[in-house]
Image (tube, rainbow, N blue to C red; front, side, top):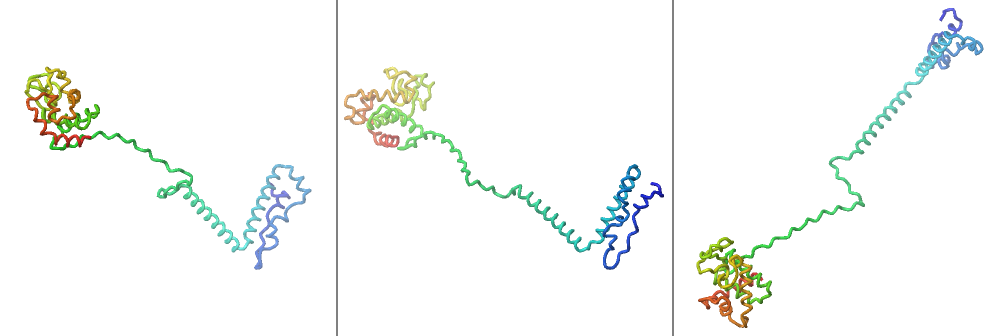
Length: 280
């Protein structure tokens, strides 16, 4: 802008007035450039040119900045310090609150979750019970486990055929005498040795628990080597003996077996009674 321009000279800021002891001068409170504003009628005409508009805008900016500095200088230091302290406290409080909210948002890993009062406890699935396998009968009357297992087969078949206890005792005592409750194969019949057996005898073609002979019509070698089949064959023959229930044990057994030692069965009656009682 040209230095001789009248408008530029009017907008030049005045020298700041010296500050008196009792406070800022009236000129500084009002603003150093308030008196330099030209009359309205002259300004509207002069603002038609672009350089004048720029100069005027620059002068207004300087006036506003100077006014702000003067206002800040005139304000007492104590209120400014209090405001700054209050702002600092507010910022600190906001920061603490934000941290507190951040901590409360995520539960502590060591804190135990609180169950909902309406939530029902989940029922643990009931484990399926596996049916217990039938245990082998405990041996009694001086028998081995194999002998006791064979005695159980004899008793189970008699129970299935609904024979009275006396018939069960007769059958067990007979097997004790004939085979000592072991499933015998025959050395005379090689075929009998092809089936499960626990001993080998040489009494003609007698096989199985009751030493029944295939040649006498008791059944095939394969059938008679099965304890269940041999037991059923004995019971069926006993039921055909008239009045067998009124006979002594040895006479009833002899009526079925036709043995050369008819009185040998009686010696096993007590032990057979003990075995039947343990299995029924």
